[in-house]
Length: 117
Image (cartoon, rainbow, N blue to C red; front, top):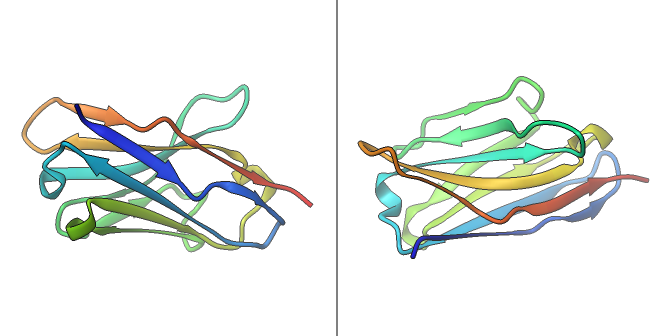
């Protein structure tokens, strides 16, 4: 059974940093496009960042220049380094895996990020 487990969320002051991790199991990680999404209360889930198998990335405009997505295929893990955090970054952050060449997608359970003074 495929599992994606996020960690690293928490409470941080504006301007601070956090690093989220998402570790996948029972999945061919090297064939997966990995992404982070987030959902704030009352809002729809929105795209944050994506990394393809060979390291190409793209970002939502709202996080460009502040967030960095990376992956370690040997550890089946994708990361989201978040710097210069703002209160509007407060949300539940979800990890997503899309298997290349299939219509299979998987989601993690989410990790809460709260940016507040």
